[in-house]
Image 1 (spheres, one colour):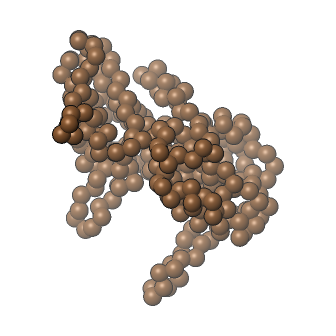
Image 2 (cartoon, one colour; image 1 turned 90 degrees about the horizontal axis):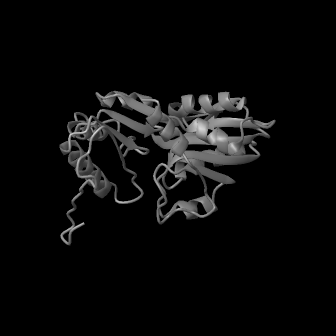
Image 3 (cartoon, helix red, strand yellow; image 1 turned 120 degrees about the horizontal axis):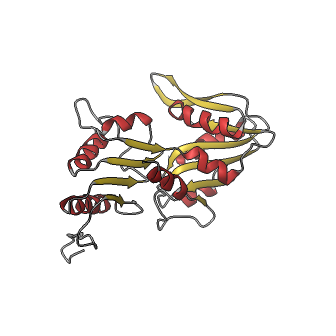
Length: 267
């Protein structure tokens, strides 16, 4: 990084050949890290490798998969286009917000799943009373996958707008959570407000204990305060993003190194 804030990236090997893997994480300053990635891919491509595999355990803007206004840009598709112009041959990523985002890239995309790593951490089988819950319909497949691996039931939460003049929402839980130990699974946690609100509804419906399992830990400064006031008993995340300054010590971290290594070896 230069004094004017600009940066340069130079491969250490003088002559790159064969199959090259470029790994980038985003624990801070997403846009600086993205430009660092762009420079790294450009520098590697200039050395004439046989192939380039980009490993992005967390794909920035993956939740920005729709335009913010009619006719507006789709940020994640713009990002995909930039990365592809830099000549990658394959992308390995982890737990995209929706699997359909793979189609934003013309190159092959490996979208690794959270559930197998989470099962290793929690144990290979559910205990009596366990249930997996998705906080919304968008994550239903994610919850169903984890429940199938654990051998337990799953439920989905659904929000309803009360009427056209009332912006408050009611929540319906499609499944009986009373007396159960809940694994509330989501793809990402930021301030935690969405998950903590879901947990409050689950506790009100009789849930006994709640573990929040989130693939990507994008912790904001308000996370600790919100968690302290929440009904969440335990938080489990992966190391897809890396530790940030706001990372609580009590959060459990699951490594996805085995998943990434397996994807690289399976080529």
